[in-house]
Image (cartoon, rainbow, N blue to C red):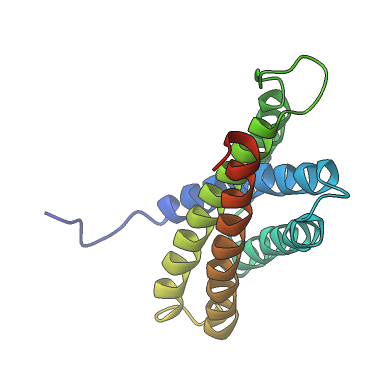
Length: 165
């Protein structure tokens, strides 16, 4: 049976977990956009990297409005985790592999799917909490849906380049 008195601390934990994911996602997006300079998806990836950084800032705005303190240890761990993730084997020793692009686009898409879920959660909360801007959350949700579609298109192109087809 559901608790009729939810623990208010849970929202803070939830939002800080999303902030950690947004931190790693923004770093990954920036790195991928830089790595793909001169490639067909360069313009889209550069715009996505900027938008993902903006989305992280929007989450911080929501957290501030809800008076949820930022847990810096979570964001620091996510930042470091993204850096360590760069060390994974990709089939090449000194250069980027087409496999890296596929996997990074898949990670970005998963991150944006998670971000969209977070915006949906906040959108439900906004119906009962006037501190949240429903219009802004609707815009963020629309943008996340577009980002998912764009990342999927880039992913399909990258899989064809990496694996043939």
